[in-house]
Length: 245
Image (tube, rainbow, N blue to C red; front, side, top):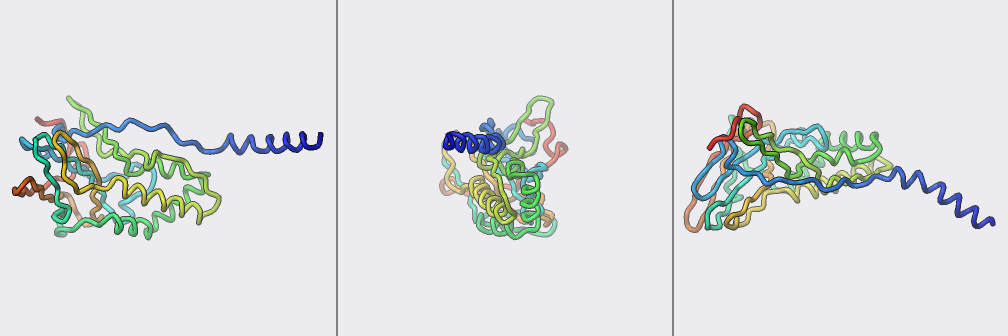
């Protein structure tokens, strides 16, 4: 009888624990961006290219406060060649000069060393979990409207599936946030490999923030040919406007 009573009490104690346990939201649709629909994008007979400036969504880590300017690069190969964007030739261009992108490792180090990282972890701990803090990262989700509407910029989706992680202390919250930010920065970084025919490559290039960068210079290699383009960083309805064809 006593053993049954003990089991009952244990189960009764566990009910609120499981009831309050955070769950992961279901995966959300991720629409592939068509850069040919973006006003001011680069359009050629072989490929279309657009660069969209990072804008903090109000959730997750604000990378601009971590001295990072993630630029969402979209390259649609509509030809039959296999072009490659040369990573070593990428430049952020602005009033203060030209800047090289940070490597993924450098971007990770900047994010971890920032004051906003510590504050984000504190806020997540106060809210009772890291789910909300991780719900608005660099997830490669872009919403495209055509016709009379405008392109709604780089919509921030959930990093690593937007999983919720409970934390009981600030060190634990910082450790879990650190792990997920690293995974996010690596997962969504631009991959500088040849782009197959009829394929759209998307990814972030991590430029320095607060340097007046408003353009991005890239060089594309296709066979023995090199082409350099200067892309405006699209970050507002005025820049994006109606779709232009």
